[in-house]
Image (cartoon, rainbow, N blue to C red; front, side, top):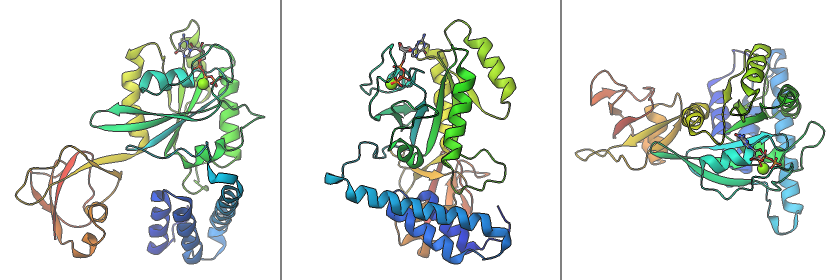
Length: 323
Ligand SMILES: Nc1nc2c(ncn2[C@@H]2O[C@H](COP(=O)(O)OP(=O)(O)OP(=O)(O)O)[C@@H](O)[C@H]2O)c(=O)[nH]1
Ligand SMILES: [Mg+2]
């Protein structure tokens, strides 16, 4: 990422990252395009933005054309974040979503048993994380619409069947397909804007031979985070929940009105790195303008410490806005 991008550009990019609808995304991208400094150093980035704009317009067009407008691959977001599973036929996606949520998924010993995305909510401490089971893909066949599901996700889980020697091909195949279509980004330069964060799940770790395959995978791809899991062993699922929360890159913030106890029931969900000012904007659209400072319990040096507007919050902070 070139270093000379303006504040205005970064704000537009942040709006793009936060955008939930295609329309919001398109608007933010168009603003990014308008304010990006036009010189050689940003050429690649400009091309990236143009590509994204073209694709979103194309997707919007397709949506309009499809009669009734119902898209089974569009999964409405719920909870603190949406994590979508991706993987080859029979690798164990549905079994995992079934083990982690109460969703009615179909688990079967034959491939292509899941025809459309199915969403379920996974409880994690005091929030819910949405998991989406999907139909399988292969390196030469990605169901139409599924790429859209992946692109809209807050994070992806690349699931591979670790019990077969094909797991390496599955991993390489997934990485290739998703990178080619600019869903994920493996380059160090981060050319693709807002690629979807991901991690790899080595599924069926309870089966014979899986541990050895995992070792090989880790040696071949030391830069990737690979978590061993089994849908049938809860001792592998508990640590996974924590990793899924970390993958979403979010923090929970609890609001507190002056003279009242903190509202601990329903945390606000913000991106990691968010400030008191960002939090104020989430509580009410007029608050950022009026915000003077805040009192923070949690990450501050002492309870109820007064902090400035640009104070960076941390997970589980309690915040009292001073307007
Ligand atoms: N031993 C073991 N078997 C598993 C595990 N997860 C899934 N299986 C089995 O693997 C087969 C496929 O599991 P599914 O969850 O249906 O796989 P899928 O990836 O959803 O398959 P598609 O929907 O066809 O893409 C089933 O027979 C499951 O019982 C696991 O963790 N351990
Ligand atoms: Mg399935």
